[in-house]
Amino acid sequence: MRNFGFRRPSSGGEDGTGWIYADLFLALTIVGLGSAVVTSSSPAAESKAPKTFQLSCAEFPVRVPANIKGNAAAIDNSINQEIAKRGWSAESSKPGLVIVMGGFNGNESPGDGDGRAKSITPALRAASPQLASVEMRTAGARSVSVNGQQTSVGGAGSYVLVVYLLYSGPALTEDCTR
Image (cartoon, rainbow, N blue to C red; front, side, top):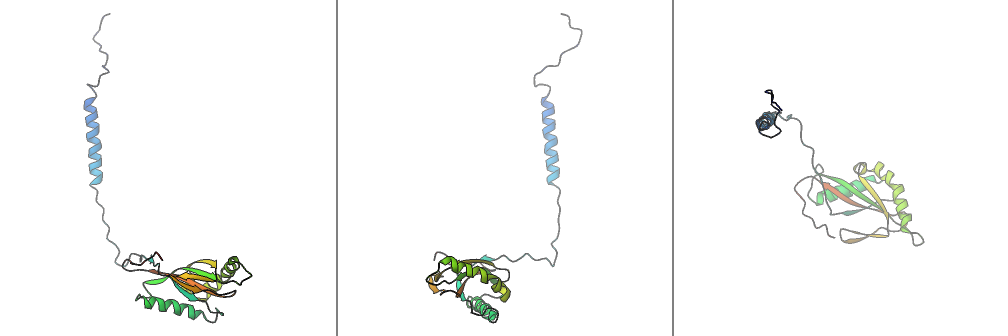
């Protein structure tokens, strides 16, 4: 067969190597230019980072008065006294978790105390501004261990709050194994 001056392109990689390097150089140039773009924004003078709170594992009990509506200040005073006892300020600490323990009589089960604790939770939130937006859990018990000490809850109609505080400040070094 005669060849009339037309050559068939070779399928070898000899002709494409230059294009591979050109494509690689182009890609690196684009990446380099993209990383050279610098944006800067100055933070607003008035904007402050929100406080970061940590949950203290040193719980404390607060006995709920028989008449919650008339004695809500007793709950707030107990919380404020504990905050002061720890040397914290009201701006850097607040209740973060509250377990409402409801008492029950001898012929009842812990579920009855838990049911009463659930029913009193809205009244606690309404009576105490410090408890208005706090996570609350409930349980039924006659006594409870609070920070390593046994605390009596009592019979039906008796309530004890087990309170955990949130604190904003240096890292707490507490023994949370009790």
